[in-house]
Length: 199
Ligand SMILES: [Zn+2]
View 1: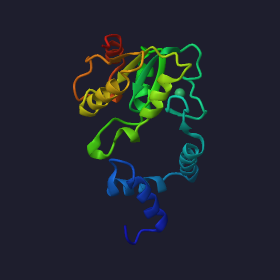
View 2 (view 1 turned 30 degrees about the vertical axis):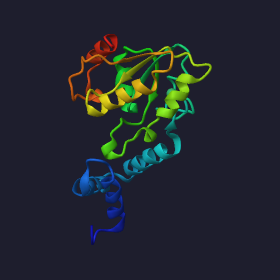
View 3 (view 1 turned 45 degrees about the vertical axis):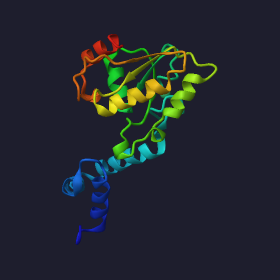
């Protein structure tokens, strides 16, 4: 990005870091942004700064939250005996939107994929084990809600093996979801069925 004003090339370099964008689109976004009214550009910047300042992982389940403990973990009406393990906060969100689950969650932060370096140590698996084995743990059932693909299967197998010594039932979302589908894009009724028919 030679000969560009540095404010433009710096901003484009930041957009280019977002997965799937690439340098051309990055520059296109920046050129669009500079045409916007200064106020709206400043709001954009403030929204980004708020992410850095306010958003952290819930210390219980690991989802993104502005509080130390997220609103789901802090809600006494949730069923603390059923724990749904998901890969990401987006997956948690689609399950919440389906309205079919009233238990609590654990966010792994991804799925196992040794080829791209996602080993068990890079995910919140140790934390999950500690949560399940804690003396005051109320969890009786764990539902593994992963994408029905190779990484999802690998992670489910790994967890099933490593949690087998605990007095809990482990189930996986039923195959209402087509193989290769992403949970993130599943519709609410498919998800509700998959939850109901877990095995
Ligand atoms: Zn939480």
